[in-house]
Image (cartoon, rainbow, N blue to C red; front, side, top):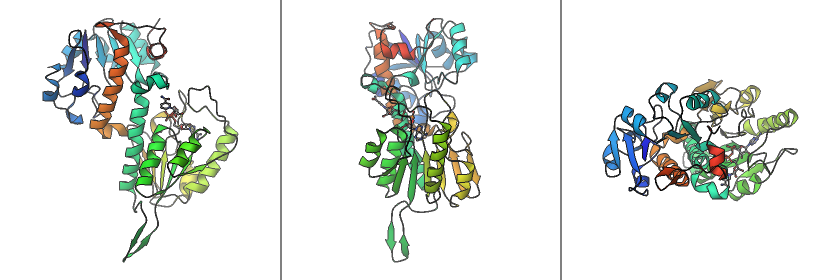
Length: 358
Ligand code: NAD
């Protein structure tokens, strides 16, 4: 069996790193990697040579039985791939149904790693958690660099400075990592979430949990938040407005699986914020938590800088690739038996991730 690794087209990460390849049984599996695939993530071709064949892109596309990437490959390249091959990537199927249909039509199979259930048994494969954790950390560093002031309190002969106030909207994996990082830098942190379970986690990191009563919190939603009523969101927006007006940094991470992200920071709120405030919207690609954010862009609205970036993990490519690679390896081990692809749809993880079953 050949497992192919392609160079990402607009991302610094690589799907599998050399250290992970070592763990596979070479008797059954050959790795083929596109030349330069790991370079931007600090894994040059020489590091792969012991475990993989370094080839051109076309050869990887044509000969692989499983093709592993982070972002989906283009529709144009689907025709080059061997019939029956399995594409493993983050397909975001709720927003990419057309591509999934094209993959099926091309006689290929697709597996989407963002559909891995958030269960204990699947933890080692959970790319959403590993990438979100990097994004949360990176968001704080970016905010600290962009902010016109210090994060920690400073008492110096030249004057005293109060610690920055950081507001975190959504205390899931990214939000909790953002809280921990902002606290380590000395900021005062407040956080919102609609899941009651988040309160204890927020408080254990030394931040204040802001509760808006009346949230719908379904325990059978796989740990995910569910959509809130318009009335609740409006009350929440008012509460967020009160806090955001005195914050120096707002990091937004609130998402709802398969749905548009809730707008928590309205234009009116941004206009009440201090000039120099930094907003990092990690939910920008799923609609944005800030009404003014634009995915992949920085918007300056009356001195408030709104950075819409849902791909911050790509900006820490070495460690993000290492995590992704370990997650993928755990997942592949579930699918491969004695060098053959073995898709057991009675297994919840396989059943949830394979998008092309008929
Ligand atoms: P996510 O990216 O889907 O959303 C981020 C956060 O936004 C969540 O905490 C969510 O509750 C919150 N949110 C949604 N709407 C909101 C609103 N209107 N206001 C404020 N906050 C709002 O979530 P995630 O980080 O991927 O985590 C999802 C869940 O999965 C969490 O419960 C997490 O603890 C759980 N999880 C479980 C495992 C496991 O057991 N293996 C691993 C990772 C995460």
